[in-house]
Length: 159
Length: 159
Image (cartoon, rainbow over all chains, first blue to last red; front, side, top):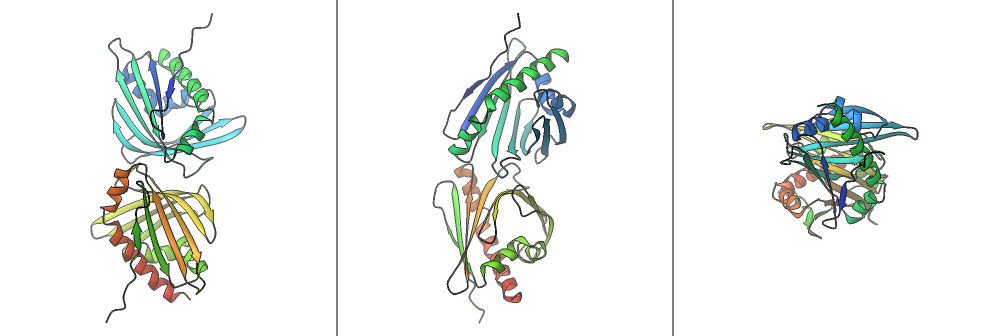
């Protein structure tokens, strides 16, 4: 039997937000590292696709840019860091090349649980409800669960 | 007597927007050129300060980045084009290095008036009312009027 894969909780707390919650079986420091070290990000963010980390400047004002290479072609994603508070809080912008100039603000908080696991809460704020709903309909949730399953595997190997 | 300088109309049509309206004494094509040609932008956008145009890729998905050099130091501004419809409409993001990750969407429309002048309407949409109000309190209106006065002068010379 395959182990059951945990699904992230996806909710819409306000008309312009998406909130994602997921628990990972690793310490907050390890989850933080997996989210900010380019060699580690490249191993899970692309859900098995090749991911080129062009920029990952994890500091206030720093830019990030990832390019995912799949059978269908290339997809670029980029943004800029607004806030970096290691190991508990990251705020950055998120933009997909396919819809340039449409920018969401992603706030990621990492909460250390008493049992050694880590709760990750990711809230995205959009400029309009239509943009938020477009993201929900884009297959985001499936992609997200694939990325997080890949992150589970990575966290199980780097102990 | 100094000629009277026209002031831009600045209003807040919704709780997250700023709307700026101004008429320029030049054709729409000339105003468009002054807003999209790097050599011309460098002559008015910085209000008399040296302006380095690092990027100005006026096409959907293209990036722009300007650095203003003043006595107080350097100020960087950047963003990305969402929509480019020459000579009537530009939509791009706007971000100041001093507040990285705080992104407004600027929509600029150029309306050709029957008398040969051009009405420019610039609407900025912010993620929150607080960000919008922060921009209003930043001295934006004075800087804007200085830029537009410099643009008037430029438009009077390139006929």
